[in-house]
Image 1 (cartoon, rainbow, N blue to C red):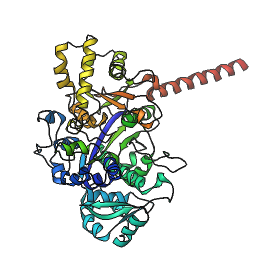
Image 2: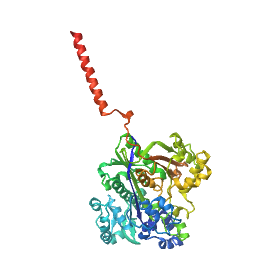
Image 3: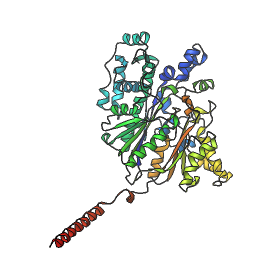
Image 4: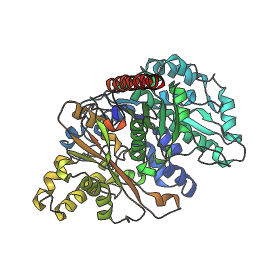
Length: 517
């Protein structure tokens, strides 16, 4: 039987200080142009936590608003505050930077994170009040470190400073003196990914209504890599996050595929559950500090706030079929193969139309398509256009060429079967998976039947291949649990077979005795 999506969690972390001190665009600028205007102007373009809460795409991401409601709001969205500003939503929450810094420290198991006493004392009550944070996580927070010692770590021992409200409140120390893979910069990057994944895991498990002990396997699909000089991407983010989240019965591993990683992982999770290898698998990913403020120069130049001030995280809980939750249909998979090529038409053909054709479906049989869900508020000022819209137009155009749509149907197709982009530009985070929570809700209430998740990735960024990548998978309303006759026999059939065998055995014994007489 097909596996199902039992629940999903989506979290955001507002990190304006990390934009300045840890985002790659800013750290690079500090090296090549330290006295430039961008770094001088940047602080005045940072949003407060309250402004981040009032941002429409953020409220959509955590489930307080829907993509359809967002579509009714005129772009751009940054200057139109949302009427809902809650920190907690149907699918997750937005966490402020100070609380997240404490969670970051709780995720450190090698005594690399040092925090000042005043900061811990001021922030701890708020973290304790978070409904997802229990005493086991609070107990992991390290004892305070003297402020002078923290400054010495930063000034003399290459530690990476941690800031809140532009004040140094702690640091992350290097884990090795010469191994660049264990430098303070990399350790901070990886601990951020781990901590935001922990938050996402806790959220997904809560939303799925399951016990932590039910999770048997975790797949992490972020874009970071943890290891040392002998195995730079050895891992394992999945098991590391599961440990802090308290998933004591889980094992796990990491899957990497750039932006396509989450969809690859979703397929793998579904296959593991459907095969019977595991009953409950969670796909998870935390956020990426490197991409904070990635398009900041373009935003500042155009007088916009820094919109890439949010770390993203998500988790999807995949379980055995319960006859209710949406199914992951592994019979409808799209694959961008080595031979597909990178032409947009070839990519859409391989990821959308080929799997539909194999299943005997047309493009109009799919209610919604969820490809790269990038927020156009972020990408358009940077010159990248509206990424989801471009995907929908290409899908529709190819449908016209195939005779499945009329040319005049394109605007309607885009409006009705597309989904407005709203995810933060965190690489893997926008790639297909943000809409799973909404799709699940609509399939449960009967207003949606099918959604295609399309993940695409840029493998050439690793400088090992020029190939593009992509996979797609269909999520569909549950068709009801049906007995799989090919997988075995029912209990009644087993009893009947045993009884028949015993009768035959008894008859053979009687015949044997008769022959002897």
